[in-house]
Length: 241
Image (cartoon, rainbow, N blue to C red):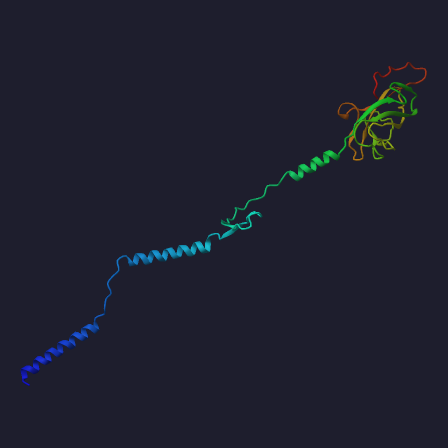
């Protein structure tokens, strides 16, 4: 082989060798896909949103509507209902129990009222001697709805008490519509003159009531103290006491 031929063969061999090394050294690049980064970012955000709603949103509960008994072959309706938490608030007290109690008491509570019937003893202006003992008696009618029991009493409220004991228990039971005679032991004053003492009734709780309008009027004892040999004093007028 000639020297010139050997040089050609060496040159061709070297070219092939350099081409192979260049191919191994240079990495193969894949062609770029348009819009790929934006698509991957959008998918990531969508996955995050889905996870948030799954963990944080109210869980829907199926509500099954059962068909009517006559429609046995019907398929139950399933409705998804979202459960929401109602805002907390302070409950408003109801007036119903209070009103019920008031109405119940109004049906069971009675009221007291009295009516003066007459003076049984010592009518108005009766003459008495100084320091004379006497017993005043009134006839009083129960015109209320309460039954007067032994806790009821006559009480002094105004004027001359004339040593009368107050309260003075009535001493018996008086049904509505019944009449009782209330007696109080008294002593006429020492000095001559006209004297009057007003009385009322009271119940077991010491609540006073009387006669007349709104049961606020009194019944009374009115006497004239006289000394023998002296001119008489004017008598009391009127009645109802």
